Amino acid sequence: MKIWICLLLVLSMAMPVAAAPAQVPAKSALLMDAATGTVLMEQNSHEPLAPASVTKVMTLLLIMEAIDRGELGWEDTVTASETAAAKGGSQVYLKAGETMTVTDMVKSIAVSSANDCACAMAEHLAGTEDAFVERMNARAAELGMADTHFVNCTGLDDDPKAAEHRTSAHDIAIMSRELLTAHPKIREFTTIWMDTIRGGTFGLSNTNKLIRFYPGATGLKTGFTQGAGYCLSASAQRDGMELIAVVMGAATSAQRFAACKQMLDQGFASYALIDPEPPEAQVEVALGTQAYVEAVPGARQPILIDKSQRSSVTTEVTLEPEVSAPVSRGQRLGTLTVKAGEQILAQIPMVAKDRVPRLTWGQMFVFVLKNMV
Image (cartoon, rainbow, N blue to C red; front, side):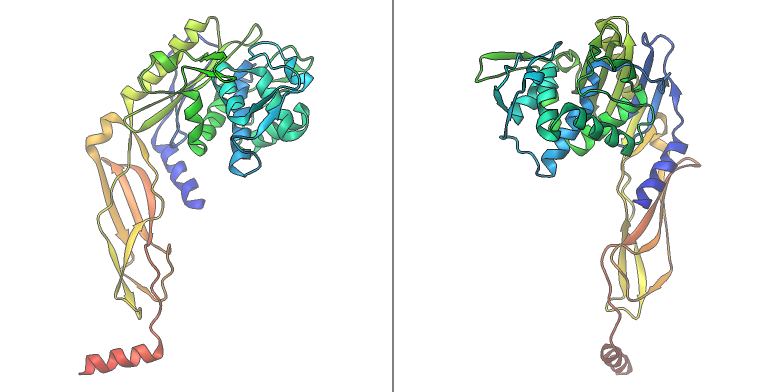
């Protein structure tokens, strides 16, 4: 963990944040690289605002985490309560007592932003929506989402406490990144343009129009209420890089899509991910069962660079001249330094690929005899 933290700190210093263009027509905006978490551009990104249904990014994250822990199965059935069935806004019109698989619930939330399904899933996992919201806020705190306080799992503003339901473009990017990178299966749902549930009798159409019209779009979640305006967390992949663009408080639906498209276009045009391959390296081992141990990078993390730096990227490995056995697998042996010209982009620990035991007294005796002969 310390290795990753150090690497990300180096990356954040090497990659300055650019301000979002002034023409982004929204209250708040941010562009983030999903692999490294680097903020590439931002506009008023820490102001707590109403997120509308973009809230459901956290709802989906908790669902996916429950599935990964084995607490929930894709074919498990969920029963809609009267409370869930009564949810307004975007919905698939669940009836109280109706059952639906987790797969179809997640599909309905991700594609059609179904408030009734979000509430049904929250109640299924935590007993009540309020208990689920406590989990949402606890998870937000774990992720460092300091601008966030949830009061429901849907983003609806018809709750008396809705004025307290707030998050920021920065925090939306954080939870979107966690959902995308830790749970890649979610893309199977967030990239659906049109589908059906209830055995093909009820159609779903994605509220995120970028899924159809933006090349490489991978998600993620739209939101709208009168109080929040038009919001969007949009993600897309090109050339091995995934970006997350967040817009909050746009005046029209068209403006939120255009703003995210503009930020994504600029990000893909300006930045690239590299994964430099270090040269083969070995360190001599004293009193070991083998004379050398191979040194490899301890953390292979893509490095985000400005595309103008690509031709000037170099790598340099500095190693200990010798180590004494025993050598542990993963033991630090040196440093891989990645540069663009004279600018240090990253310093990555080089570690032992394998363990090397120390020679026993008997092995040393045989070794000495062989050398005498």
